Length: 324
Image 1 (cartoon, rainbow, N blue to C red):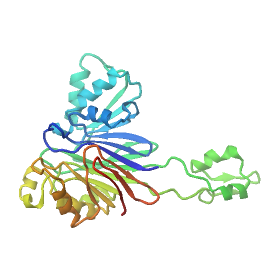
Image 2 (image 1 turned 45 degrees about the vertical axis):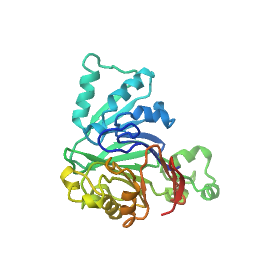
Image 3 (image 1 turned 45 degrees about the horizontal axis):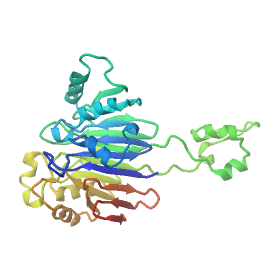
Image 4 (image 1 turned 180 degrees about the vertical axis):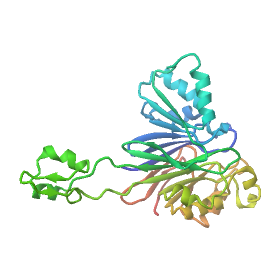
């Protein structure tokens, strides 16, 4: 199983005629998550031929419009599509209150689907969402308003059995499901075989860290831990390093330092100021410090292969195979 990120939008501030604000589609651990939901997100989901019906949860980092103004329209469209599958929404309290005000004032169940509305505890670091296939952690960023980052981590609900040991101990097929769940096995003679002997080691869980609007954090590794891929905002070039902290943003160089800090294998940068007509300037600045830096270009896809840990980049301009 791989980790896949589809960039629906990566522009900063207001949308333009050809650029959409922040939104990402993440596929990890058999789950499909939407991270932020700027204007035009549902149009981008259609354009990228993604399944509205298979979306499991939405995560909103903060209450600035370029990260959430597409949410109400998306929730409404899912209802018009007669969606049945439940959906989880994790968002700042004021966003949850907005959803309640807009949809739930006159009906306890305004949608065709069950929407779980969970306010994020802003300013706190904790396990936000846990499923059989993926865990989601949140932690505070530092912006002009409360803003949260997210770490998405694979979970393996079942182990793979060691076929050699299964044959050696003549374990019946009916006992294998419990062994996959982590239980030891006992023979009819009363001998107990530990689960570790009967199963193969679990693969290392893939992790994706998402750091949108924020200044550079010296303690990011303490907040987010490690990650295979880091998405970090890079609003400004190094020439604007004096302006960046005043506006609650980072430079491309600081994004690269963040990637080094958490031991990432790959760095994606986005939220570039519209003053930069070409992303190459900021990408090149970051690559001076962190070579495996790539622009989170709108409609691009980043697919991390588990076995080789190579990153396949399907960019609207080109296809790249990157190695860590």
